[in-house]
Image (tube, each protein chain N blue to C red):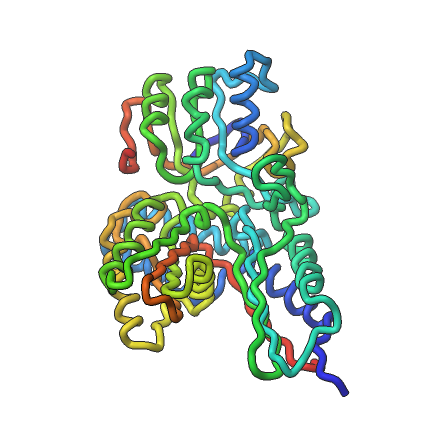
Amino acid sequence: MSSVYPSEVIVQKLSRAVRDAGVFLPEDVKHALRKAYEQQLQDAPDSLGASVFEHILQNIKDAETHRLPICQDTGMAVVFAEQGIEGYVSRDIESVIHKALAQAVKEGNFRPSVVEDPVFTRKNTMTGLPAVIHYSRIPGDVLRISGLLKGFGSENCSAVSMLNPTAGEQGVIGAVLEAVKKAGGKPCPPVIIGVGIGGTADSAPILAKRALLRETGSAHPDQRYAELERTILDQVNRLGIGPGGLGGDTTALAVMIEHAHTHIAGLPVAVNISCWADRKFCVEIAVNE
Amino acid sequence: MLNGPMLVARDQAHGRLAALIESNKPLPVSLEGETIYYMGPAPAKPGDIIGSCGPTTASRMDPYTPLLMDCGLLCSIGKGPRLSAVADAVVRNNGLYLYAYGGCGALYAACVTSVETIAFEDLGPEALLRITVRNFPVIAAIDSNGKNIYPVS
C-alpha cells in the first residue's frame, strides 16, 4: 500500500483549525494577555492601558460566545506546509490547502481581505484567497501544516535590516527596537515580536514569521538566544508605547527569535510583528490517516 | 460611549472621496458634521446585521483626513497615532479623533444597530456605509484643543 496523506483528511482538519484560529485565541496568547493585565492592574489600575486590556479580554469572550472572528481583519493566511518525505498528497497540495482555507473563510465568516492586483485594479478576490504558502520537505511520515492569519495592521510594521556582520547582539537589539518604535501604536500592542536572524534578505522574514508560530513566551532552546529574547523584550517594554499605543510598560508580550546560517559579509535581521490577536494554527496528518 | 449614526470608510473609499473632491464632483454623501469610522466589516452571520467590525489603523487615512475635514468632516474614529497634519486639521475644524479599541471586532459587532451601504459597493468590505451604534466605546485621542494621547510625529 502506498503512503498517502489523504486530501479529504487534510481539508477536514485544516479547515476546522483555520476557522477556529479566527475565533478562538490560543491558550498561550490568552495566558500572556491575562498575566500582562494583572501586572497592569498592579502598576496602573486606572490607566488607559488597563482599559485596553479590559476591552481585549471582553472581546476574546464575545468572539468565543458568538462565534465571531476576534478581529474583522482575518488577515492573509501565511501557511507552512512541511511534508514528511515518506508520504505524498494524492492531489496537488496547493489546491488542497486552498480548498480547506476557502471552507474556513466561509464557515468562519472571515472578511475577504485579499486583492488580486496590488497596484492597478486592487480588485478584491472576495474569497480571502490565495494564501502565501511556504513548502518544505522534512524527514518522516507526517504532513504538518501550520500558519498564521496575519492581519495587515501589524504586517505593515515589518522590517528587514541588513546589518554589518560585526554588528552583533547590539546591532540586533537596535534593529528590533527601531522597528517597534516606528510601529508605535499602529499594530495593536501589546504585540508579539518574531525576529528572524541570518539567511538572506528573503529568508530572514520567513524565519521571523516562523518564530511567531512558537508558543508565546517559550524560551529559545539555545541559552544565548533565550537571553537575547529576554533582553529585547525588556528594552521594548521600556519604550513606553503600551497597550493600544496609549502609554505604559506592556508594549510586547513576547519576543521570539529564529536564526539560520548566513554569509560572511552580512547579518540580516527581520522583524515581524503580530498584533495581540496572534491567530495561529497547526495540524498534522499521518500517512494513510 | 457613542450613540447614533456614523459613516464607515477605509482606504479605497477615502481615495475615491478625495478624487471626487479634487475634481469638483458631487460626493455620494455630504460630509458636513459627519463622523467616519475607519473600518471594513467581516460578513454578517445569518440572522446578524454585521460581522466583526473593529477599527483599522488610522494613519493610512492621514493623507486624506485634512482634506475631508476641510470639507465638513467633524470626527474620525480609528486606532493608532496620526500625523501632525491631522492633529492640525482637528484643531482648525474644531473636530475630534477618537481611539476605538484595536482588534476588538467581536465586541464592536454588538454595538451596531443598523447598516446601510451608501456607495462604492464594488469595493466589497471597503464600501462606504452608514451604521448606527449604541454604547460604542471610544477614548478621545486628539481633541479640538490639540490635546493628543499619542506622541506627535
